[in-house]
Length: 242
Image (tube, rainbow, N blue to C red):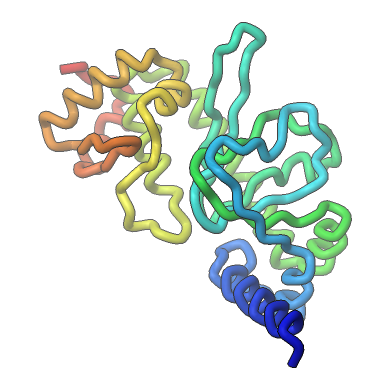
């Protein structure tokens, strides 16, 4: 077999193996999986790489294989708000792909990451032919609406401890490929942009929790040690800073 053909076969086998493990696509029949393999393009990105910007056409769907992707918005005066962090086993960019309208947010590689990119022109006919996959995307959109409702509720009704606890729990509990992991690869600046509080306030609260052994602070990461304590705090919505 020619060397080029061998490399192509290895690439296909690797892509197939990854797609079979992805929760969104793992239940596809073999012929549908084969078709998806032809559509999906594996791309490696460096931290900070721009995937799409607000206003761009929704021309592709993305699936995260490794690393995390930041979904954010920014104001004309330079303020940033992180709306979501998308991790392994999750997809993003589905809204603009499904409705054909412009992107409403920015998508950026939050870490070095690998993603699958699927062109809208190929994805829409494919998902129409796969009712079970279409149902998964309906469930995904419902989950996005619930997530947004929770975010609004937290901003309106919770103080800093409650909002921060809710954010940390949300980031750990949505893990698809490694649900047991309690390590969140996020900086304190990034978490401050998620909950709408200053970095100084976030640092003070995290250090208070670290002294209680609720969390452990690492370089560029937060490890959740006492999820039950944070969950109780998130459910009440308020809590003491110290």
